[in-house]
Length: 228
Image 1 (cartoon, rainbow, N blue to C red):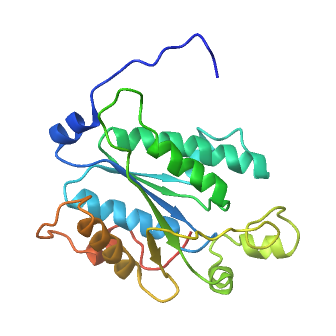
Image 2 (spheres, one colour):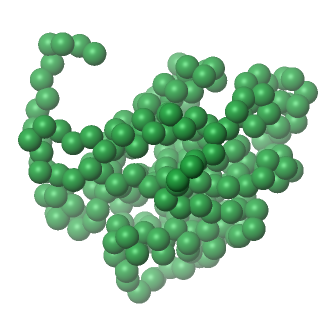
């Protein structure tokens, strides 16, 4: 890190939350490729927007077209990928937006780093740590491999893709995630409803009369089946 820089104080998060009438926090979706991370996160983002909440999803593939296009899939590059996304998600959440991230993020240490980033509070700040909600998209690898919408498991089994999570590179499942959704047993709509209920119970989003159901939100973005 450069030494000739100075941190400039800004508005407090409490002020932003008050003016925008919502809380900012991060929902960190983690799981195997084809577990349904992006599918559920997209449907949830749509649902939150229908509720009048500001939300934005950061997708594991999409960020590699821009912000992280210089990174590969070695362990070191995966770690840097998650560090950068952790920082970006924190900025969104600090701006009173619901940040949703859908990344395999296979290593516990990297996910802990992202959590710690959200927990850090600037010196002299009156703000609380930014809520970090780990959502484990739990699905047996056999189910993920059967889905294989991008044909990646087939290529990995054939040796065409090196360091593929779940096949030739490990996935370290969360030990104490805030939320566990089982996409091999429940529908997209049921998973979204489960997350929304948890967020309401924790008072991260207001409990209100729904104008759009999770089923309608899922259908409006074409997520009838699990993908990535």
